[in-house]
Length: 142
Image (cartoon, rainbow, N blue to C red):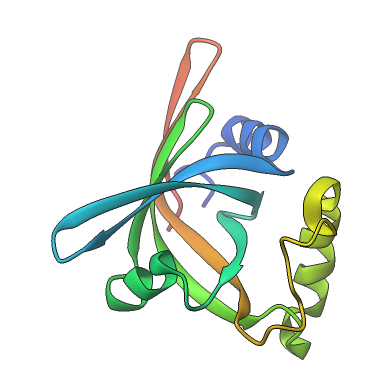
């Protein structure tokens, strides 16, 4: 990821999105685009969202994992993946980081960890365009 993802762009991504950030997430269903705002957290070329496995977005991603995102002078394409239940043993370390990132609202009743359908959506970025103080980075995350 070095030349395709310059260090300066990495630093901007970490600073701008390495905490609770609102993003527009676009999916498709039978050639109809759908977009919604999600709380997200960025880490190492991917955004993470806590959601419900039976939600419309997850049903759409199951059929077509290609997604697009947009927020804070950044647009990108990616692949959506259901990482499973938030309390799954393999998700423990990531779940801890997400609880910390989303601490301001996590315990307000919106997230039900006991619900087996509460899951982590990972959006593995493939390409994107980042704007920062007059600079434009065309990033290849692959």
